[in-house]
Image (cartoon, rainbow, N blue to C red; front, side, top):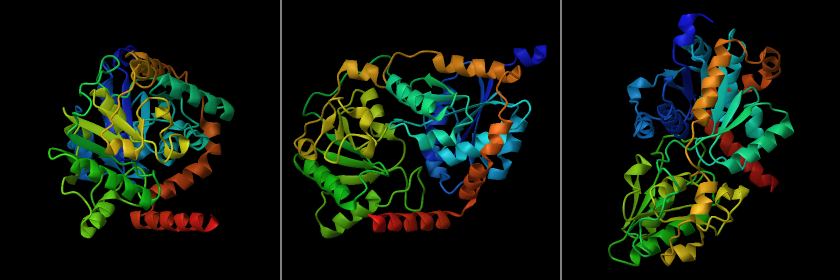
Amino acid sequence: MTAATASRPPSVLAIADSESYLKWAAQLLDSLDGFTTRLALVRTPILPTPSQIEGALAGSGRQPRDVPVLDRRGIADTIRASGCDVVLAAATGPVVQQVYGSAARMDPRPALVSGLPGVGLPATRKGQRYRRLGDAFLTHSHREAREYRRVMAALRIPAEVVVTRLPMLRSEGPPVCTTAPGQVRSLVFAPQAKVPPEAADRIRIVRTLSAWAEAADDREVVIKLRSREGEQETHHDAHPYRDLVAQLREEGTLSSRVRLAYGPMSDYLVAGAGLVTVSSTAALESLDRGLPTAIISDFGVGPGMLNEAFAGSGTERTLAQIAADDMPFPTATWLEQNYFHPRSTDCADALRLLAVRARERQLPDLSRESRRQDLRRIRAELRTAAPAPVVRGYRLLSGRCGRSRR
């Protein structure tokens, strides 16, 4: 390594594939003092639209013009041309696998890092198999770190598990509730694409929100959506809330104080607001601002509803309790143990050390393991190359086959 190389700041190239990963990557890069950072999107069926990109970058130090969109065939060339020390694959599993595969055989190769853009539980073997080639995996609580270390040990994946804070959480310590009981006037609902899976359960949620709004003259409900008609999200949504709201409006059974909203979540998490969700990471953003926050428990609190991180938090509430304006806030002990731990430099330190190892050619040779991953990587590339209508058709067919098997 030359003196000039040793003196330049460590560099990170983040490659994202969806709105949620883009938001996470942009804010994570902003938190890395003393690093040179770049951010790009890769073109896939879930590529965010210009309005989604603008929303995802809100509050970060980047503008949409700063984020180029790469063709999947250009990933390797972009990594090589950037001369980066670390590649952050801020993407869904198949795309992480493709990014890792593109970088793994470079000589010298950059360090390979990934993570999830929010609550990372449950820790799954499938997700980590996509990330098998990684040097490090970022988690956002000590509980998450324990679960991912357990999964990685079972799969014999040697990646380092690093604990950091979600970059969108700004409170210095465990937040405190800033709204007195019964004082919530704007109830924000944050949908999750995967859960609950049944349309009937989602309609129950919307009806409950409507009933809450009608119980007092000065209340409103905001259903904060992540995509407009025709836009894609990280996960497929079989029963979009916009369609369910339209159905209830047509029936004349929905309060006029229930409205759909788009854009950055931060625009709606304001004084006097509270948040309701089944499992969205927006719950953490709400708690970060000291707002009452309820996790709907009617459908379960656990891995099946992607909300096991909130079990025992004290935020679990039934729809009946929410309708009665019972909006909770967790204890300081739970907050510190789950996502609101003290800030540290662990993430930056880990990335800085990986950058040094990359420059010194001290990272493990992944060429052999990469060849073993080739078949899976090719499948990932085909998936990212498929036109959106093909992907939607495949998902629809898969869903029908799954229901027929049940």
